[in-house]
Image 1 (spheres, one colour):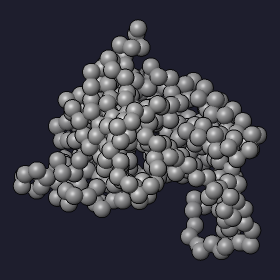
Image 2: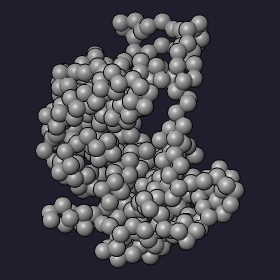
Image 3: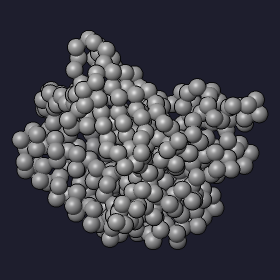
Image 4: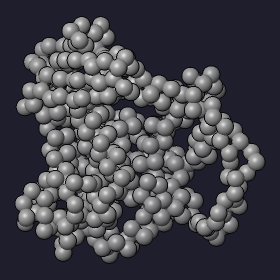
Length: 398
């Protein structure tokens, strides 16, 4: 809806499924649920889902249950008390965005509930999730932290750091420290991967779940899980760190793992599709796994188009806010809006200039491209001032 500007889907009637609740001794069960005779709008389905997720543990963070994004951590909160720091960031993002949807839907009561919940969550994150140099990953049922400097294994996890930036829930100074820690501890320049966590689970007493069954350095257990690597790069782009955004995007580009026969023999995967994993295990260093992975491919497309090239659609408005290398003088994007083509040339200019956008020779009054589906070809020129992470820091100091 943010991209299309069309929220009519929220009024569509959607059926509920009919299935039994889990028994007390069950983590899951397999069955074929039936379609019930009850329906409601998609909007109300969303409200129910968010309400159901507002369940918190002793630190005021969301319950993790038998796994969050990383379903391999299925034992962290299996007894119903473990909490997820990553889920706290994610839930904050959901609450803030859905509060705007609720307002537009004339549901001011739920919009306020979302805002209040997000504010409380933000306070609890800062009070209970910060570890000194990065954000923790979770708390086990017994209160033991995970993703902390006190852990012998998995002392730091990528997604808490990246989502501290992406969600905008974290203290900005802390999130910058957290991202520096992630870069220092998880970016493996020697083997061109970005680890999900480090050190891998192996021999410690921690039992996070079936993730520990993977060989150290394989898949989620200390290898590169490409979803998470992309989120880390998105976070650097959000921080306007041009240099690291380009460095890390180049690092995870599958083409760059197979430029020579020797590299291809190590990677052992197709260089023209996304791989879910790239291994750090000693006997399989640099090997790609689970290729043709559409989830990572979709995120990588979004990373390149929106975070790196900075092409973002908001309804009938196109924003252009790139985070490309400072050495790039220009680049071209051919953007199709329904049946209409926009040929966009982006020029990087001196940092003292302001953003200027011209469409068919006419300067835009609000620094944006106003999209019209008129079946014509349009010429867009965007002059973007150099903006870097260093400049952002200097501006902040001033």
